[in-house]
Each structure stands twice: as C-alpha cells, then as structure tokens.
Amino acid sequence: METLDSADMPPNLPGYRISRQLGTGASSTVWLARRNGDGERFAIKCVTVAAHGPAEAQGIDGGVSREAGILFGVKHKHLVGIHDVVQFEIDGHGAQGIVMDYAAGGSLANLLSGRGRLRVGEVVTVLGPLAQALDYLHSQGLVHGDVSPGNVLFTAEGMPLLADFGITSRVGDAQNSLDVGTPGFIDPVGVVSEGHDEGALRPERDVYSLAAVGWFCLTGSVPEQAADRPPLSFVADDVPRSIAGALEAALDPDPRMRPSAREFSTAIFRSAAPQGVDLAGAVHASVIPELLTRRQALDRKPRQRARKFGKLHSPRRLVKAATPRPRRTPKPRKNMGRVRAAVVLGIGVLVGAAAWGLWAQGKPSATPSGVGNGARASSEGLTADILESSRLQEGLKQELRSDDLAVVVPALATVRDVALREGPVELLAVINAPGSPAEAADHQVGDHLRTAGTVFAGLATTVTAVTIEEPPQPDHAMVGLVAATSAYEERLSSGSVVRSEPAGTPQHLRLHLERRDGRWQIVEILAGTTG
Image 1: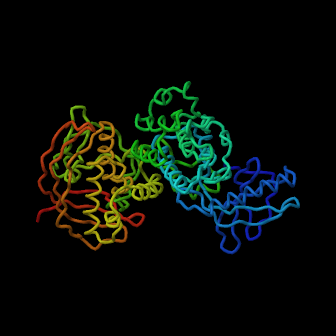
Image 2: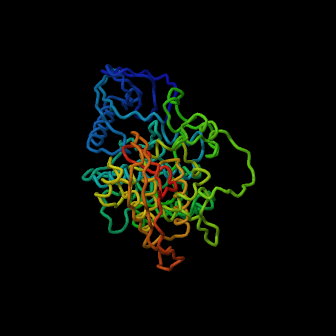
Image 3: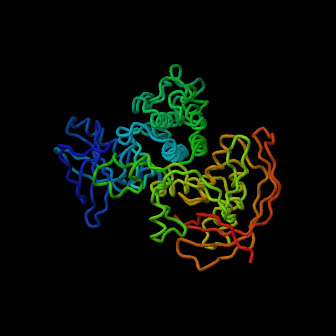
C-alpha cells in the first residue's frame, strides 16, 4: 500500500539513496530508493527488526534470504523482478534488503481503497495477466500463497505485477499452514481432500485467491463462504455472465473442480475486452506525471477524445475531432463511398465485419467503451501476452513480427480468421491497434460471438496483390490489397447453423497500419480503387 509519510527512520543502504517509504508490514518496510551513480529507482524491502528480539529478527532475516532465493529463480513479465540483495545494519543488528523493481502505479489495495470498484474491462486487465504469472509459477513447482490486493502492484503503464513471495511454497518444502495469507482471500477449504497428498503443493489455492481478488474488484467486498454467497450477477448486475461464470468456477468449494491458472486466464481474456486501469488519484503525487493510464475523467465518452491515428494528425482535424458535438438525429448520407453497410440479425446485433470488405464500407462512430489514449499503454502488454500464450503456429507468430508488410498483411488476415472461425476472439486485440476504428468494429463482432455462443465456421480470407502505396514511415503505412472471403456458416457449439453466408466477391481495399511494440497492427480499412 502506498504510504505518503512515516516517522520510521530510513535505513542506511550502501549504494542507494532513500527517497520515501512505499509501505510497511508486520515485519518489513519497503522503501523507494535511487541507485548511486545512475539514479535508477528501485523498491527495497527491508526487515523491520526494531520491534523484535535478536533471535526473532534473525529468523525474519532468514525469511528475506529465502524470498530472495525464490525471486532470483523465476522470471516473468508479471512478477516483480529482483536485482540485488544488500546487507545493512539497523539498531545494531545485521539485516538484508531485497532490491526489486519499482512499481510506480502503487498497489491494487490502494487503488480500491480510493475507488471502491473497478470496471469489468479493468478487472480483465488485472486478472488475465496475473493468472498467466501464476500458471508460470505453478509450472516451476511454486505456489505463491498470498494472492491479495496488497500484493498486486502496477507499473506506470498500468501493467499488473504479482509481488511478495514471503510465504511462497516450493516443491520439497514443509508446507505452510492452510490459514496463512490475507484474510478474505484465503481458500476456506481447511482440510486436505481425500486422496490428496498432504505434502503436495496446492496451486488451486492460488486460483481461489485470484478469483477472490476479482470478486473484490467487481463488488467492493470479499466473497463469502460458498453456502452463503449469492451469485455474482445478483451482487453486481453489470458483470457479464461469462466473467461471473469464470470467477464462480474458480471459487468452487471443491478444489478439484476449479480451473487451472492457465484455464482461468483463458476464460478471463475471453469474457470481455481489456481496458486500461485508471491509476490517477490512487498514487503518490510525485508519480502522477509518469502515469500513461491517467485520464481527465473516468466517465468521459470515447467520442469526446481526439482520435490520434490515421491522417487526423493535422491541427485542424485534431481540433475538430476533440470538440464535442451536440446530439442530433442522423440524416441519410448521399456519399455512397462512405455508406455504412451492416448485416443485422433479427435481434439487431451488428455483425458487419465478418469479412474484411465490410469494414471498408463504414467505420464505427466511436471507439469501444474504455478504449482510448489511457488504454493503449497497458493494451500493448496485454496483446503481447495474448499472442505469447496463444496456440497459433510459431511460423505465423513470426510473420506477425515481420518487417515485411507483404508478409504481415496476409498473417493479420489469417489470425482474424482463426479468431472468428475457432472462437478465441481475444486474438482480435493482436491485429487491431488500440483505440482504432478497426478495433471498434471487431469489438462489436467479438461481443456478438461471445453473447450468442457462435463462431463463423469455415471463414477464410484470401489476400492477394499486396502493394505498398507509398514509402512507409517508421510507425505508419498504407497498403493496397485485394481480399475475398470464403462461404461460411454461423454455428452454435452444438453444431446447429444459425445462418449461412456465400463467398464474397474480391474487393480492392486500403489498409492503414500502425507499428506499435515491434508489430504492425490495423488502424483502419478503406475502400480501394480498381484503377
């Protein structure tokens, strides 16, 4: 938890200058420090020995050494990294400090204490990556043991990190008591299931704790015991059934029925689109200028933000895009080159982007809710996670990272086909630039497929005649192509066909691409010319 001021005397750490206290616990204090020489910032966790006798302090100090050993042995982008262990003296006793990554965004506990609840998309941003980190830990023979809001930190970009490995269990360790951890987030199952080895690690306890964190983020309270716990949809009626189902499965009173951390991550990413976590107002004042996820107001509508992509970089366009417009009744447009085309089902759900050609016939009027400048930074990390954990062939992943646009464009089409044809709609975030018209269109399609429980079976896009229209800039390019879609059927998981679509005719298109995080992504798809 972010602590503004403290009367605690900062330790004298060789090689570092203490700036301020970040947080304190029963046996340790975390300080923000700058390294002498280069000024780089780190968080240093030091044992608080003043309140303990020498023997007890020695035991706590040994725990620090154990935690440092665990951290040195693991490496994952969503785990707090360790850099060094420093020896120092305080109150006449020798002690150790763990030099770790500094998470400028503070803790989830501190964020929730100010906001009470998070939005669904923000919860996806938190839970999905942390579940991936737990899956990695479990594969390494480790169980974290204390997944809780106070141990979830954020970088200035809004990326979540799992911290505090003080009670982490390893294969071969004497197992900790089942009641250790943070109250409210501890698995309430206090007995070992029949046939379960008492000395074995229990990764399902981490899954329960992470789901409890998600419940807390969405409702503002910890989940009750299963017998007394109402369905999540009763407690928070704005939560999609998909994410409610994932959390309730992970909170199952029978540990054997819970999903693995990897399964839980997949379910969370499929449940809703991720959004940038707004950290402004929940961090130390000195950190505000660093935050890439801050926003002027949480409820500002996407249409009021200037669209900083495509050819909207001219001052005149930016001023026009940033100026709120009064609501008015839409009038039919006569410019047929920009007429919206949509395939509308009987219930009125827009599915107009099933084929690339339909994107070109009309852009969505607004970016998806919560997607904007604040969401872009954290989206980069999330899309990299999605791509890394996907089951796409390695060759296809390499093509997505290629510098050759003639290789990248067909690969983008293939990934989109896989997402819509086979169901992992989270892959759409890999191919579309955050906050773009392409993302908004696919956001609608993905929401429809999730809600309806369908896929576009048989969908395949053929891309030919890829041409670079002008020399590409380092981060922008315009590409011409001809695209044609196969016939496909919208099917339920049972195999029942909802509707059928014939093969599309080849269409000339223009793609506006943007390069972010080392990969090209689609910003906008426009109608091309045949001449």
